[in-house]
Amino acid sequence: MKVRAAIIGSGNIGTDLLYKALRSSLIEPVWMVGIDAASEGLQRARDRGVKTTSEGIAGLLPHLAKDKIRIAFDATSAHAHQENAKKLEPLGVTMIDLTPAALGPYCIPPVNLREHVGKKLTNVNMVSCGGQATIPMVAAVSRVQAVGYAEIVATVASRSIGPGTRQNIDEFTRTTARAVEKIGGAKRGKAIIVINPAEPPLIMRDTIHCLTEAEPRQQEIARSIAEMLAEVQRYVPGYQMKSDPVFDGKRVTVFIEVAGLGDYLPTYAGNLDIMTAAALRTGELFAEEMV
Amino acid sequence: MNLRGKKVVLHDMCLRDGMHPKRHQISLEQMVGVASALDQAGVPLIEVTHGDGLGGASINYGFGLHSDEQYLRAVVPKMKQAKISALLLPGIGTVDGLKMAADAGVRTLRIATHCTEADVAAQHIGTACKLGLDTVGFLMMAHMSTPEQLLTQAKRMESDGANCIYITDSAGTMLPDDVTARVALFRQELRAKTEVGFHGHHNLALGIANSLAAVEAGASRIDGSAAGLGAGAGNTPLEVFVAVLDRMGVEHGVDLYKLMDVAEDLVLPMMDAPVRIDRDSLILGYAGVYSSFLLFAKRASVRYGVSSRDILVEMGRRKTVGGQEDLIEQVAIEMAAKKNG
Image: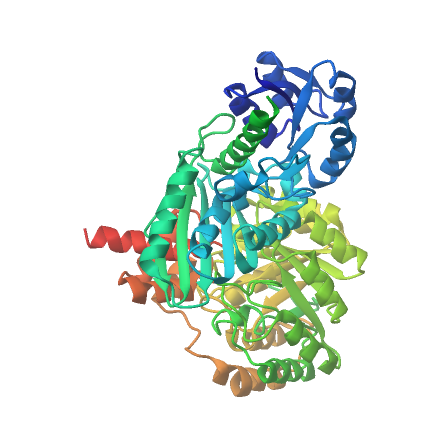
């Protein structure tokens, strides 16, 4: 039996997540929650037989119990998530937070998904698209040797960045930088996001720079990075390295490109995929525990 | 062209845009020395920040010799008449940097976005307004948008609270008519009290001509840099521009002789290499590429044995925007791999 879930937020991320969740063998998306009746995401949800409300979280609350909603994916905004979490968590709903609110612990599946098993968490945070794409590589270096500083640069297509992210771009850089430290294992972290409006849109690309404290052990790091690459590719097949890792003194640099599956936005928007695929994988882990 | 009787506010860039050719290694003594001399020369506005704005210190853009805060706290108290400005690029810096700058005494905050992405600056423009700062929207790579597209972004920044909007020719690729079309449309469509500014680069040697076109079309703030110290072939050389404005009867309030001496005696000796139109900076202007990419392409050229000019052309072909310095090394690696078969 699948665990029943709601998706809150009918923008780019919520809609892409809906498509992936509809294919899940462990999760059944039952509700899609928006705040705009004319939202394309809600229309697409209705077309696929998912119940919708355009009255925000208030429109979902009366149906929670009878529809047995156990998991809610929140793809709204950091501010809205705080409100949503306050209302849903006391009702026994586990929140998977795709906003930068970061009320719960960070989850970057290939790095720390298993740490969340058996803890009865009510809220986990998926950091950011840039974090999902880069922190595995920071961790791949830091599990070999100490990283004093790591910096990630995420370049994304203008069309793939919705109004929520735009209004709160500082939340992206802050939350990602903190997770580069906490989950990536760097002593100090920095995150940069660049938005490019080129047509046709560019595929999400990420640069990960690490400064190791001692001279980098090149072979071990290259092997660790290759293993991490394979681990991420298990749930995001379009996650690729553009060259071998660069070693320059104590700098280790990795260039990544993330092509999506094209579920909602076309394949250039790998930033949506890596976020929604990571969130779904996390939700599935919790679902396994619930059944 | 008759500009007689017009007034412009001149804004010096050599301690911010000039950080690019200096790889952000300007010393505190040089910062204070140059800023004080510009202050004495009557330059009303001087920008002091990492080349890529507040919080730009990074592997990607280069670490500064000192932090933004150290530079600002050293320079601001020394100013007699000049005001110090700071630059912020959302996505690189945050409102934390903005608040620090305001606390350090910065009175003009310039919030820069790519010319199509003004809405990422709303929270920063809003915060700068709330702090009572002279708040400037800075639309970079302005050649990549039509005047009409650029205007929609300018209006967005204006409605978020900016009191001045800049047309920023980051690639030094605009022609005087391009400048005229954009400034004139802004002047016609923005609120009367909203100022319009122009920031030029000298990659096609059009810094002066473009700035004059901007003044003629109604711009009231013009960026330049003593001795031209800035990214690419540098910014509009400020002392040259002042000499031209003098001859044309434009009011600007700067002492030409003192400014010439700052350029010659203080800024020129600081240059690690001549800031001039070489084949790489010329190609920036010719191909419309972000001027700060210059030194990164030169370094990647040495490391990977490919032509810096070819790297820059490829960066242009890929429609890159400001901030994508990290792609330069990847492009060089790909070009080297192709070359070596």
